[in-house]
Length: 169
Image 1 (cartoon, one colour):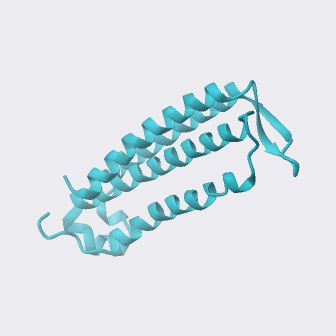
Image 2 (tube, helix red, strand yellow; image 1 turned 45 degrees about the vertical axis):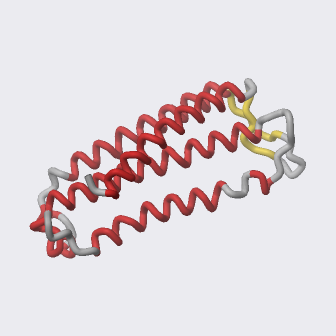
């Protein structure tokens, strides 16, 4: 097993476990009405029932993982001549390696969504804790971390496709 494949598989498992853990811990910590929007004085402007957040997060998790896994499995059936020309030229004789790269990328994308959703649930849970007041700098890290995760995953596919296939494949 290649290092990249191992990393993606471990990340996928950890992201699934992290999402499930974050979902249940945050659900327990939420009040009946979860504040999702605040004014300048940190007062709740809009609330949502905690069950709705739980079911929406669960639905998003199931759809994300199912849909991206299905697309990754369907990629194997796409004929090589239907792919872009630079992929055809470089990867035509290395189709199994190309399939592994694309499958790993879709798994990494699903893992990125799982990770960001888990972090979002954690921040939402922290915002709704009654024992201390949150300031914007307490959760300001979420947007840069989210962008870094998604940019790393999105940029990794073109970079990997532009590299030469391994000769031992």
